Length: 235
Ligand code: ATP
Image (cartoon, rainbow, N blue to C red; front, side, top):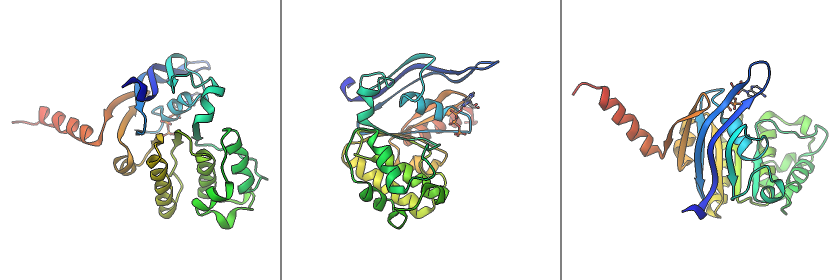
């Protein structure tokens, strides 16, 4: 029902300016229901990050509408307290420690949490006083994730959350995601890993050149593929 719709994207187009304007996202429509994990999957440049950043309010739509909990995502006072965001590029200052970074980023949400608890949750306890400049890429990504889940947001945006993480860290991240979902969180993520989308997503949106080419549960996507194949296969 409508009241369970957390995110509604309707006919969204996102155009990057410049000498030759380019529609990175074109006439995109999809919605995400409360408690769902929705995965955007697609090739480099398909428009996944642009979509995610527009839905979480980081950039504005060129045309079409986006609502998050019934509000425009660019209405930060309404939306920011309810969402957590992990982008591909983190904006952490190099000279802040891990704990300071998580605390600072978390405080922007307006929610309360304990930085040490989060850092230990992602196996970064021994790095808690290390400066960001001295972390590995995968460790930085885990700090990003800690900041995003600060205060257990109702809606979590994760842009390629497991890229650059070793297998143990990936498993740990998915365990934490499962705990958040058990408490009712809704999650939208982008990934290049089909196996992760298969394993963890309730629904998958396949993007190509700014549009959704297919969408559904894994079973629906597989069934769609089968019927397409049977159409062209000789009987
Ligand atoms: P990836 O898997 O590589 O992260 P993506 O699906 O997330 O890709 P986007 O980052 O959304 O794709 O990019 C979509 C398209 O928009 C690409 O063709 C990209 O070159 C273009 N694009 C992205 N950012 C800008 C920008 N700031 N200015 C102009 N074009 C951009």
